[in-house]
Image (tube, rainbow, N blue to C red):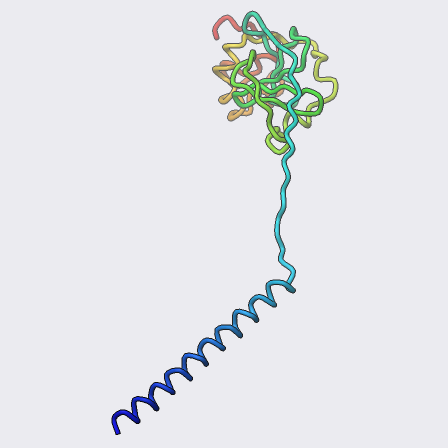
Length: 179
């Protein structure tokens, strides 16, 4: 009798295993059907990098800078190519692309359009016209003070409302001997 029960139990075990396998096969088939026929939302991005040589730029000495009115972007008027100082970096546009550097002489590396600061894109078209009363600022002075000037909205102070030392420099006729 014991043998008969074990045979019968063995038959039941085989049947249970077949039921589990067929259920698993059915579930996996169902998942496959849904994955093939269900549209999947995805993001695709393509990045094409074409290496266009940047014209060589050598500035023999730290350039004097002007602040572009209405911005906190600085540029050297004596340099014939467009080059800008903004937030501690130098930027240079060339043939529709932008380049960035830690120093005014490079080395330059290309950056994508999303990494170009809005202040550089929105510059006034006639930014090279220097308004009367603006003075050149020494490069090292701008390097030392740009962050404080922007934080304190230094260039936003109207003429005649200089609240303390260093206010309005670059936009007025003040001397920079103390900097």
